[in-house]
Image (tube, rainbow, N blue to C red; front, side, top):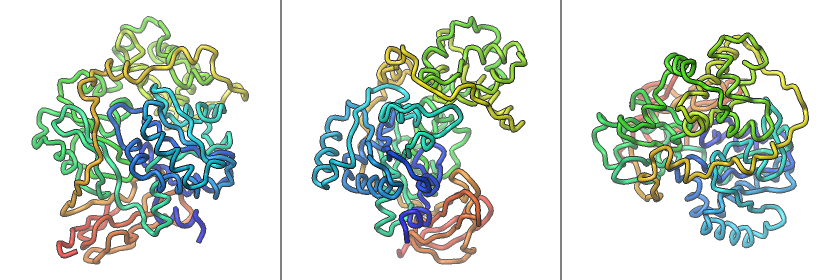
Length: 445
């Protein structure tokens, strides 16, 4: 069985972001395998701690993936502030005799250093063209937890758990290992807060994560953090703005200062995206197809909305409006150029993370969230069949079946993009439907 088969069978997907199936990333050949250890979202603490605690496993997983795709080099991208972790990784690379294959490149503590295309440029000097992905410039990118999952798969262990940071306006910031399918409220209560009537929760990082409409969901393989803040915190109010009201505010106050464009990370990489012009196109219903479609170049990092705009407007919502509209119409942006280079002033417009944290009103909550030995043992798990990019997994178990932890319970539909799913506990299947498989824990297991 090849590494590709093992990764596919183990249900490995991007541990964060959209949850793209990792076996698909490993199907092609590339010059570089890149480890995204930047973890640029404020308050999240997963990757940096995994690299400190499991350095050998992560490096071996990265090496295995890199060798399989024929990479000439594996590069670990990590922020230069993590001196201890960098030292541990360097010592581990040396002890494994991998100095000729794997190296560490330190990155500035800026946002969004962990954006896939920003990372590719910082580590290789290559710019991913508009409407393309890293493989187009010979790069495959995985993050620290994904590399750890590759190692675990080689040891015969599929993805059954994920690591999550719980942070924000809470008594006990922490990072913990959680079974996939755990009710989210059970994770949130480890924060020391029992009632969330006065709180809102951001699913993911404070920049890109959405405010949850309710807390009744379940942990997925790509869940990386929950930020708990009081409902009256200005960040919650900003992120709760709907697109209709945002459009109205944009039209009433946008003065075309172009700060949203000047700090846009994709614009700074040389892409033809101009958020201030996209704002005008929406505000005045300009029928400019190429300008509208350039909104598809937006990575939704939210820098324009939560930092750049001096008037507190919503450029990202304008981009999102056109992205959604054109996706529905099946219109795709057509790049006008083939050669890309960063804009000459890019280095002077990178945003320090500390400045961003202060602007977001999170300085008092920017604390260490240690990886605990606390073990969550939910009575039931609800494992989504569609917690990844692609088609939902087809269940291969039935109500009443006994399943063991790590047992495969869902397969990829034949010929489709998707990922396998596995039971995260030992117990009895109590419900199977199109959306999830519910399992009750066997208390004698």
